[in-house]
Length: 191
Image (cartoon, rainbow, N blue to C red; front, side):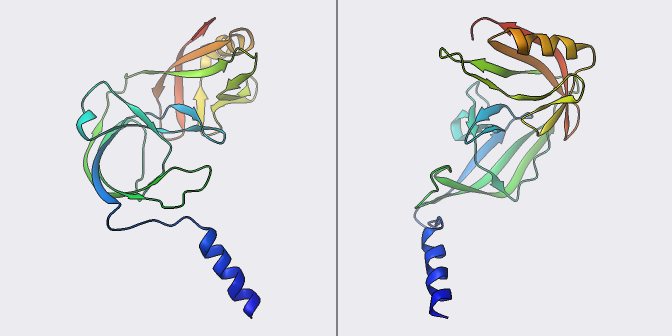
């Protein structure tokens, strides 16, 4: 029995702790209508956000943090009131903050023909590449195994750009919660 208590104590001590009270604040966030790709421990989709006085400006940041109780749907710009708590012992691969939705201030649907550009492949000076597109022309493509890419007539262009260009960008439109529509592909020699 003492072994069980010792194991339980070890688990509790090794887990991250959220500090409440003095390190807690309420902030306003704007979350954009699409999720860009980024590298954390692995390639992933992140939130594109504005916070506080940056809301409404052209300054956007990436947030890797999950927002507790927030049911994100692409195609909408969200204005949120968030409780932000500092994590006293964050995990090595995690952020310093825990975000929890307090309320949705506004949820604005964007026009259906709105498009955005994403980096799909990046090649470093070492020759190593990060590819955010998974799959192939026959089986289909996805963004980091999260959003299926509907590429239709652009599938061949996507495949050719991924094979031959050091940097690849795609222009997309939101199709649904699980699909994005590839409108155009551009391969570049530099970023």
